[in-house]
Image (tube, rainbow, N blue to C red; front, side, top):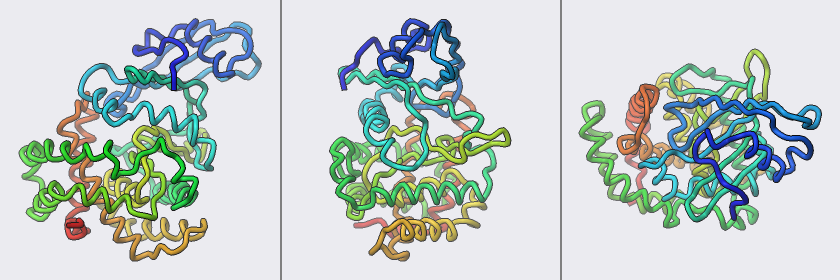
Length: 366
């Protein structure tokens, strides 16, 4: 992917002239030009790995019905968050998703109007559909049981499309969890784990501390196990701030955004991550059995065979254990605001409870 024009790294770089050129190159603006653009930042404390804003656009001679509101994503400012994105090819992969994968499946995501990526410095830009009036979820506010069921069902349909298929295996640009890019998690977890114990160890039971210590010694085995067939494409950050639901004002019924870390792996990674970090503990406990059963039933109804519910439940426990890495890893990330700190507290408490409830340390492969 070769950049075709200057890629904005600050929102002030998104001028009417730049936006006109970008939309013309993509074919989204065949006539006329952008007369003005107003940038409204949002997502503070949530969009930790990039900068996100809404663009309100006026045109001079543009085609009738041209969209006036977009969402734009650009890199995080220089610092540890941006370096992490470079190390894990986060920006490159998201641009690749919208160019090569998004149109192949029924799972609703934001339409892309322009994308660019510079492989030399990992600058990137995405101009995307604004999904309003649909509303994005949040780990810090309640979501309904029906919304949880909808998110699980649609994720299962997405996974089923790629489930152990030649189409999935042919996508060389997408790593498996066992590939070198994700083996950086070994060093990362071992770096964060002592800091996490110092900060949050008093919140955890001895079993959770024992499980985390065991995980630190066996991340290579976990990565290998989660990369064994049958694999699918996983979102890898399937949580409420990346999910949109219809609001009272309307909007799409359901959509998924933020396709940055997606990979090829066991689909239950996404379910373990979603149920344990997005849902308050009592809601997760109440819905957990039903949700995993719904996921498995939807796989089967979508054509997946040879994958038993017992295996699905075992893999769910593996997913819960491995995605503990993300709550542990927050100690090394610039959380940016009180919202980010509240997010860290919520997912840490929830994941501690899930590891205890499910005894996930017992399924770590040795």
